[in-house]
Length: 356
Image (cartoon, rainbow, N blue to C red):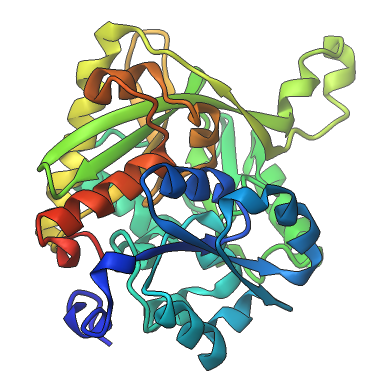
Protein backbone atom coordinates (compact mmCIF):
# COMPACT_ATOMS: atom_id res chain seq x y z
CA UNK A 1 0.00 0.00 0.00
CA UNK A 2 1.32 3.43 -0.90
CA UNK A 3 1.74 5.68 2.12
CA UNK A 4 0.71 8.73 0.09
CA UNK A 5 -2.06 7.45 -2.21
CA UNK A 6 -5.09 7.43 0.06
CA UNK A 7 -7.98 7.87 -2.37
CA UNK A 8 -8.81 4.15 -2.40
CA UNK A 9 -9.08 4.16 1.41
CA UNK A 10 -12.03 6.54 1.41
CA UNK A 11 -13.83 5.79 -1.87
CA UNK A 12 -16.68 4.01 -0.05
CA UNK A 13 -16.85 6.43 2.89
CA UNK A 14 -19.94 8.42 3.75
CA UNK A 15 -18.47 11.87 4.38
CA UNK A 16 -21.61 12.98 6.21
CA UNK A 17 -21.04 10.31 8.85
CA UNK A 18 -17.31 10.33 9.61
CA UNK A 19 -16.25 8.71 12.90
CA UNK A 20 -13.15 9.66 14.87
CA UNK A 21 -11.40 6.52 16.17
CA UNK A 22 -8.45 6.03 18.50
CA UNK A 23 -6.83 3.54 20.89
CA UNK A 24 -7.82 3.55 24.56
CA UNK A 25 -4.50 4.84 25.89
CA UNK A 26 -2.18 7.88 26.00
CA UNK A 27 -4.43 10.82 25.00
CA UNK A 28 -7.63 8.99 24.05
CA UNK A 29 -9.95 10.91 26.37
CA UNK A 30 -8.79 14.24 24.96
CA UNK A 31 -9.20 13.01 21.36
CA UNK A 32 -12.69 11.64 22.03
CA UNK A 33 -13.74 14.78 23.89
CA UNK A 34 -12.52 17.03 21.09
CA UNK A 35 -14.30 14.94 18.45
CA UNK A 36 -17.60 15.19 20.32
CA UNK A 37 -17.24 18.97 20.64
CA UNK A 38 -16.86 19.19 16.86
CA UNK A 39 -19.96 17.05 16.26
CA UNK A 40 -18.34 13.76 15.23
CA UNK A 41 -19.24 10.25 16.29
CA UNK A 42 -16.45 8.49 18.19
CA UNK A 43 -15.07 4.97 18.26
CA UNK A 44 -12.73 3.58 20.90
CA UNK A 45 -10.54 0.52 20.40
CA UNK A 46 -9.76 -0.76 23.88
CA UNK A 47 -8.00 -3.70 25.45
CA UNK A 48 -10.35 -5.86 27.54
CA UNK A 49 -8.29 -5.23 30.68
CA UNK A 50 -8.88 -1.46 30.36
CA UNK A 51 -12.52 -1.56 29.26
CA UNK A 52 -13.83 -0.94 32.78
CA UNK A 53 -11.91 2.33 33.01
CA UNK A 54 -13.07 3.79 29.71
CA UNK A 55 -16.65 2.73 30.43
CA UNK A 56 -16.55 5.44 33.09
CA UNK A 57 -16.41 7.95 30.21
CA UNK A 58 -19.16 6.37 28.12
CA UNK A 59 -20.54 9.83 27.35
CA UNK A 60 -17.53 10.31 25.06
CA UNK A 61 -17.86 6.97 23.24
CA UNK A 62 -20.43 6.12 20.57
CA UNK A 63 -18.90 2.84 19.37
CA UNK A 64 -16.43 0.48 20.99
CA UNK A 65 -14.22 -2.38 19.84
CA UNK A 66 -12.81 -4.59 22.59
CA UNK A 67 -9.63 -6.53 21.80
CA UNK A 68 -7.54 -8.99 23.78
CA UNK A 69 -4.31 -7.33 22.64
CA UNK A 70 -3.44 -4.24 20.62
CA UNK A 71 -2.25 -6.28 17.65
CA UNK A 72 -5.83 -7.52 17.19
CA UNK A 73 -6.51 -4.12 15.65
CA UNK A 74 -5.04 -5.46 12.41
CA UNK A 75 -7.58 -8.30 12.19
CA UNK A 76 -10.16 -8.11 9.43
CA UNK A 77 -13.11 -8.08 11.83
CA UNK A 78 -11.78 -4.97 13.55
CA UNK A 79 -10.80 -3.11 10.40
CA UNK A 80 -14.12 -3.99 8.76
CA UNK A 81 -16.01 -2.60 11.75
CA UNK A 82 -13.98 0.62 11.67
CA UNK A 83 -14.53 1.03 7.94
CA UNK A 84 -18.25 0.35 8.36
CA UNK A 85 -18.37 3.42 10.59
CA UNK A 86 -16.31 5.58 8.18
CA UNK A 87 -13.52 5.81 10.74
CA UNK A 88 -10.45 7.99 10.62
CA UNK A 89 -7.82 6.72 13.04
CA UNK A 90 -6.05 9.29 15.22
CA UNK A 91 -2.56 8.01 16.11
CA UNK A 92 -0.80 8.61 19.41
CA UNK A 93 2.26 7.18 21.16
CA UNK A 94 0.70 3.81 21.91
CA UNK A 95 -0.13 3.01 18.28
CA UNK A 96 3.41 2.33 17.02
CA UNK A 97 4.71 1.09 20.38
CA UNK A 98 2.09 -1.63 20.84
CA UNK A 99 0.61 -2.34 17.41
CA UNK A 100 3.95 -2.26 15.60
CA UNK A 101 5.39 -0.08 12.87
CA UNK A 102 4.97 -2.52 9.99
CA UNK A 103 1.38 -3.31 10.97
CA UNK A 104 0.48 0.38 11.07
CA UNK A 105 2.22 1.17 7.79
CA UNK A 106 0.11 -1.37 5.88
CA UNK A 107 -3.15 -0.83 7.79
CA UNK A 108 -5.98 -0.35 5.28
CA UNK A 109 -7.54 2.51 7.19
CA UNK A 110 -7.20 6.29 6.76
CA UNK A 111 -4.92 7.76 9.42
CA UNK A 112 -4.90 11.42 10.35
CA UNK A 113 -1.32 12.64 10.04
CA UNK A 114 1.82 11.70 8.15
CA UNK A 115 2.09 7.91 8.20
CA UNK A 116 5.52 7.88 6.52
CA UNK A 117 7.00 9.83 9.45
CA UNK A 118 6.34 6.94 11.86
CA UNK A 119 9.34 4.97 10.56
CA UNK A 120 11.68 7.90 11.17
CA UNK A 121 10.21 8.58 14.61
CA UNK A 122 10.77 4.94 15.58
CA UNK A 123 14.51 5.12 14.78
CA UNK A 124 16.63 7.35 17.05
CA UNK A 125 19.38 7.96 14.52
CA UNK A 126 17.04 8.68 11.62
CA UNK A 127 15.16 11.04 13.93
CA UNK A 128 18.24 13.05 14.84
CA UNK A 129 19.41 13.17 11.23
CA UNK A 130 15.98 14.53 10.27
CA UNK A 131 16.25 17.32 12.85
CA UNK A 132 19.82 18.16 11.87
CA UNK A 133 18.95 18.36 8.17
CA UNK A 134 15.96 20.56 9.02
CA UNK A 135 18.34 23.13 10.49
CA UNK A 136 17.44 22.45 14.11
CA UNK A 137 20.15 22.46 16.80
CA UNK A 138 20.64 18.99 18.32
CA UNK A 139 22.96 17.54 21.01
CA UNK A 140 26.32 15.99 20.24
CA UNK A 141 26.08 12.24 19.69
CA UNK A 142 28.66 9.75 20.97
CA UNK A 143 29.59 6.21 20.00
CA UNK A 144 31.38 3.57 22.03
CA UNK A 145 34.47 4.21 19.91
CA UNK A 146 34.77 7.75 21.29
CA UNK A 147 36.15 9.07 24.56
CA UNK A 148 33.43 9.95 27.04
CA UNK A 149 34.52 12.18 29.90
CA UNK A 150 31.47 14.37 30.49
CA UNK A 151 27.83 13.54 31.33
CA UNK A 152 25.85 11.72 28.64
CA UNK A 153 22.33 10.33 28.54
CA UNK A 154 21.72 6.86 27.13
CA UNK A 155 18.37 6.45 25.37
CA UNK A 156 16.49 3.36 24.24
CA UNK A 157 14.11 3.10 21.26
CA UNK A 158 10.33 3.21 21.44
CA UNK A 159 7.63 5.40 22.95
CA UNK A 160 7.90 4.22 26.54
CA UNK A 161 8.11 7.63 28.11
CA UNK A 162 11.85 7.56 28.81
CA UNK A 163 11.79 4.20 30.58
CA UNK A 164 15.28 2.80 31.05
CA UNK A 165 17.18 5.99 30.15
CA UNK A 166 20.21 6.66 32.33
CA UNK A 167 23.05 9.14 32.79
CA UNK A 168 26.71 8.19 32.78
CA UNK A 169 29.98 10.10 33.09
CA UNK A 170 32.46 7.64 31.57
CA UNK A 171 32.58 5.04 28.82
CA UNK A 172 32.83 2.32 31.47
CA UNK A 173 29.57 3.45 33.08
CA UNK A 174 27.90 3.54 29.67
CA UNK A 175 29.00 -0.02 28.83
CA UNK A 176 27.92 -1.29 32.25
CA UNK A 177 24.48 0.29 31.94
CA UNK A 178 23.96 -1.07 28.43
CA UNK A 179 24.91 -4.59 29.55
CA UNK A 180 22.40 -4.35 32.38
CA UNK A 181 19.69 -3.21 29.97
CA UNK A 182 20.44 -6.16 27.67
CA UNK A 183 20.33 -8.62 30.58
CA UNK A 184 16.96 -7.18 31.65
CA UNK A 185 15.55 -7.57 28.14
CA UNK A 186 15.03 -3.81 27.69
CA UNK A 187 17.15 -3.89 24.52
CA UNK A 188 18.75 -6.67 22.49
CA UNK A 189 22.08 -5.07 21.60
CA UNK A 190 24.24 -1.98 22.11
CA UNK A 191 23.25 -0.92 18.58
CA UNK A 192 19.75 -0.14 19.91
CA UNK A 193 20.96 2.74 22.09
CA UNK A 194 21.70 6.37 21.42
CA UNK A 195 24.34 8.14 23.50
CA UNK A 196 23.81 11.89 23.63
CA UNK A 197 25.49 14.80 25.32
CA UNK A 198 23.61 15.60 28.54
CA UNK A 199 22.68 19.26 28.33
CA UNK A 200 22.00 21.19 31.52
CA UNK A 201 18.98 23.47 31.31
CA UNK A 202 15.19 23.49 31.45
CA UNK A 203 13.45 20.78 29.47
CA UNK A 204 10.64 22.22 27.38
CA UNK A 205 8.27 20.42 25.01
CA UNK A 206 6.48 22.46 22.32
CA UNK A 207 3.09 21.37 20.97
CA UNK A 208 2.75 22.38 17.32
CA UNK A 209 -0.04 21.89 14.80
CA UNK A 210 0.37 22.27 11.06
CA UNK A 211 -2.89 22.86 9.22
CA UNK A 212 -3.03 21.89 5.52
CA UNK A 213 -6.53 23.43 5.27
CA UNK A 214 -5.37 26.83 6.55
CA UNK A 215 -1.72 26.42 5.45
CA UNK A 216 -0.37 27.68 8.75
CA UNK A 217 1.66 26.52 11.72
CA UNK A 218 0.17 26.97 15.19
CA UNK A 219 1.74 26.56 18.61
CA UNK A 220 -0.90 25.13 20.92
CA UNK A 221 0.99 24.69 24.18
CA UNK A 222 4.15 23.68 26.01
CA UNK A 223 4.92 21.43 28.93
CA UNK A 224 7.61 20.07 31.21
CA UNK A 225 7.70 16.30 31.85
CA UNK A 226 7.79 15.12 35.45
CA UNK A 227 10.04 12.07 35.58
CA UNK A 228 10.74 9.33 38.06
CA UNK A 229 13.07 9.21 39.73
CA UNK A 230 15.26 12.07 38.47
CA UNK A 231 12.88 14.75 39.76
CA UNK A 232 12.62 13.12 43.18
CA UNK A 233 16.35 12.63 43.61
CA UNK A 234 17.00 16.30 44.20
CA UNK A 235 14.92 16.22 47.35
CA UNK A 236 17.60 14.01 48.88
CA UNK A 237 20.78 15.31 50.54
CA UNK A 238 23.72 15.30 48.08
CA UNK A 239 25.52 12.47 49.90
CA UNK A 240 22.55 10.13 49.31
CA UNK A 241 22.05 10.88 45.63
CA UNK A 242 25.25 9.16 44.53
CA UNK A 243 23.97 5.74 45.56
CA UNK A 244 20.84 5.92 43.38
CA UNK A 245 20.89 5.84 39.59
CA UNK A 246 18.70 8.50 38.01
CA UNK A 247 15.90 7.28 35.75
CA UNK A 248 13.61 9.16 33.36
CA UNK A 249 10.22 7.44 33.24
CA UNK A 250 7.57 10.09 32.59
CA UNK A 251 4.78 10.02 35.17
CA UNK A 252 3.04 13.30 34.35
CA UNK A 253 3.24 16.73 32.80
CA UNK A 254 3.47 20.29 34.10
CA UNK A 255 2.13 23.30 32.15
CA UNK A 256 4.65 25.80 30.85
CA UNK A 257 4.13 29.33 29.55
CA UNK A 258 7.23 30.45 27.68
CA UNK A 259 8.91 33.84 27.66
CA UNK A 260 7.60 35.60 24.59
CA UNK A 261 11.16 36.43 23.53
CA UNK A 262 11.78 32.69 23.08
CA UNK A 263 8.79 32.17 20.81
CA UNK A 264 10.35 33.41 17.53
CA UNK A 265 13.18 30.86 17.78
CA UNK A 266 10.74 28.10 18.76
CA UNK A 267 8.41 28.94 15.87
CA UNK A 268 11.37 29.07 13.47
CA UNK A 269 12.31 25.53 14.50
CA UNK A 270 8.70 24.47 13.95
CA UNK A 271 8.63 26.03 10.49
CA UNK A 272 11.95 24.37 9.61
CA UNK A 273 10.47 21.02 10.63
CA UNK A 274 7.36 21.58 8.50
CA UNK A 275 9.30 22.69 5.41
CA UNK A 276 11.82 19.85 5.60
CA UNK A 277 9.04 17.27 6.00
CA UNK A 278 7.29 18.69 2.92
CA UNK A 279 10.48 18.34 0.88
CA UNK A 280 11.50 14.86 2.03
CA UNK A 281 8.18 13.23 2.96
CA UNK A 282 5.48 14.79 0.80
CA UNK A 283 2.86 15.98 1.50
CA UNK A 284 4.66 16.81 4.77
CA UNK A 285 3.62 16.91 8.40
CA UNK A 286 -0.14 16.97 9.03
CA UNK A 287 -1.61 18.07 12.33
CA UNK A 288 0.13 17.77 15.70
CA UNK A 289 3.82 17.27 16.36
CA UNK A 290 6.16 18.05 19.23
CA UNK A 291 9.74 19.28 19.44
CA UNK A 292 11.37 18.26 22.71
CA UNK A 293 14.19 20.47 23.90
CA UNK A 294 16.47 21.87 26.56
CA UNK A 295 16.67 25.64 27.02
CA UNK A 296 20.15 26.61 28.21
CA UNK A 297 20.93 29.55 30.48
CA UNK A 298 22.11 31.61 27.52
CA UNK A 299 18.76 31.10 25.76
CA UNK A 300 20.06 28.57 23.24
CA UNK A 301 17.48 25.87 22.46
CA UNK A 302 18.72 22.35 21.73
CA UNK A 303 16.19 19.79 20.45
CA UNK A 304 16.84 16.20 21.50
CA UNK A 305 13.64 14.44 20.32
CA UNK A 306 10.53 14.90 18.25
CA UNK A 307 7.14 13.23 18.14
CA UNK A 308 5.26 13.25 14.85
CA UNK A 309 1.77 13.10 16.37
CA UNK A 310 -0.15 14.20 19.47
CA UNK A 311 1.83 13.95 22.73
CA UNK A 312 0.55 13.27 26.24
CA UNK A 313 1.68 16.71 27.43
CA UNK A 314 -1.27 18.18 25.53
CA UNK A 315 -3.59 16.50 28.05
CA UNK A 316 -2.88 19.52 30.25
CA UNK A 317 -4.89 21.75 27.98
CA UNK A 318 -8.27 20.08 27.48
CA UNK A 319 -9.88 23.51 27.91
CA UNK A 320 -7.21 25.17 25.78
CA UNK A 321 -3.83 26.76 26.35
CA UNK A 322 -2.90 30.47 26.32
CA UNK A 323 -1.50 29.97 22.83
CA UNK A 324 -4.56 28.22 21.36
CA UNK A 325 -6.68 31.18 22.50
CA UNK A 326 -4.66 33.50 20.26
CA UNK A 327 -5.79 31.56 17.19
CA UNK A 328 -9.31 30.49 18.09
CA UNK A 329 -10.55 32.60 21.01
CA UNK A 330 -12.42 29.55 22.29
CA UNK A 331 -11.45 26.39 24.23
CA UNK A 332 -9.24 24.38 21.86
CA UNK A 333 -7.41 21.27 22.98
CA UNK A 334 -5.19 19.47 20.48
CA UNK A 335 -7.81 16.72 20.41
CA UNK A 336 -10.43 19.26 19.38
CA UNK A 337 -7.99 20.90 16.95
CA UNK A 338 -7.58 17.55 15.18
CA UNK A 339 -11.35 17.19 14.87
CA UNK A 340 -11.65 20.83 13.72
CA UNK A 341 -9.07 20.17 10.99
CA UNK A 342 -11.01 17.13 9.78
CA UNK A 343 -14.23 19.17 9.78
CA UNK A 344 -12.55 21.99 7.83
CA UNK A 345 -11.15 19.43 5.37
CA UNK A 346 -14.62 17.97 4.81
CA UNK A 347 -16.09 21.44 4.25
CA UNK A 348 -13.35 22.33 1.74
CA UNK A 349 -13.33 18.92 -0.01
CA UNK A 350 -9.77 18.42 1.26
CA UNK A 351 -10.08 15.25 3.32
CA UNK A 352 -7.42 13.58 1.19
CA UNK A 353 -5.01 16.35 2.31
CA UNK A 354 -5.17 15.47 6.02
CA UNK A 355 -4.99 11.67 5.92
CA UNK A 356 -2.40 9.17 4.74
